[in-house]
Amino acid sequence: MKKVMIIMIMLGFFTSLQAKYNPYSFRSLVHSMKHLSYTQRQTIKLIKESARSKQEAIEMLAQVWEESSFGVYKVLRDKRNWRKSSYGWFHATLRTTKYNLHRQGIHVSYKRIRYLLLHNIKFNIRQYRRNINYWKKIRHHNLKQALACYNGGYKGYKRRVPKLYSRRVMLKMKVIKYLIKRHLV
Image 1 (cartoon, rainbow, N blue to C red):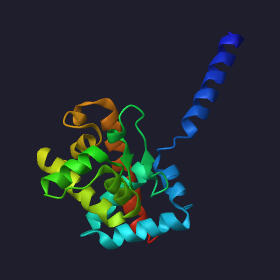
Image 2: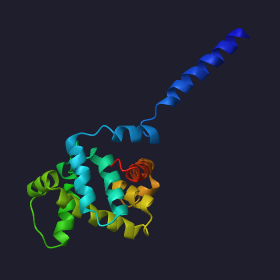
Image 3: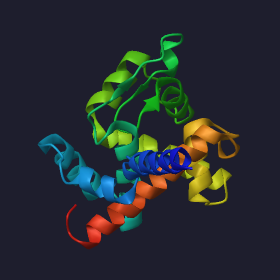
Image 4: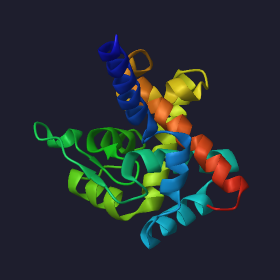
């Protein structure tokens, strides 16, 4: 009886330790926003200035936070196919960006696109707006499904990983709204 009791107490203790730290809890996300570098704060400022509305600013900030940690990690390489590598603040793929520019009648090399994605935030914001508006239109302005499709393609709203991605972005949107209300961002 004593052994069973001790085991139950130990199990309760260890599960409570595991449940204490969640990197995607509201509190830990708010705490992480208080310790940003100068370049991250400059990125936030540029995005807020270039947004057309407060809601768009919140969406873009959450997306940049999730994708590149406010511009810290701007390169994600695919070893098998370099055209699927993603660059920039919003991690746009070279292939998608080239396709979007080609549809507008702009013919640019992959090298030039990569340079623009890495060094020009205004170009990144334009590409992000085109992509997210396309997915919002396809998914009937359901932001959660649009974000999942932005991450995982046409069937992204049904798959597990893109759904988790959209949940994380939505949670980060709540954190940013909270911080904007408190004038901390």
